[in-house]
Length: 174
Image 1 (tube, one colour):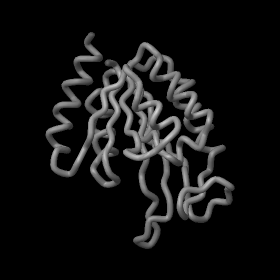
Image 2 (cartoon, helix red, strand yellow):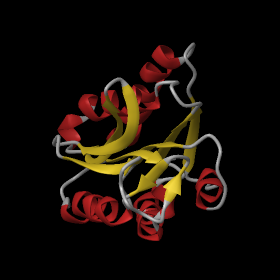
Image 3 (spheres, helix red, strand yellow):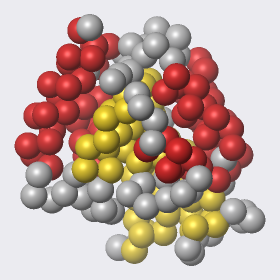
């Protein structure tokens, strides 16, 4: 199995693990992104995407004007799709794809959903975090026979980082 999906409750450490793995496997020129919270005056007001070169764009915010929303957050699908296409369609020399996360906000984009399936089908490994709950494309991806699903909790996070590092190294060396 060349694709590894990390799941778990919000706050379990999925993004932390994704960022660590992208640093550990830097030599394979990973292409991808991770998600961070936008905090304003101590309050979470949205989320932004950061590519592995440090460039970022808002994904969702309470003050964005958009018909797409998850809870109180409005999702900026146009800038999300442009940002993600720029990462994955431009980067040809990568040996590894990294996605944080395959979640409800991200899967509002049909382009993103198709791109994820294309990357999972490619000959290069994918390391991604995926929502613990979700239907449609999220469930379909979890049912694939070419993925290994790893559940992260506060208690097993450190142990799972070591396990994931070994699993990814094995995939990349094959």
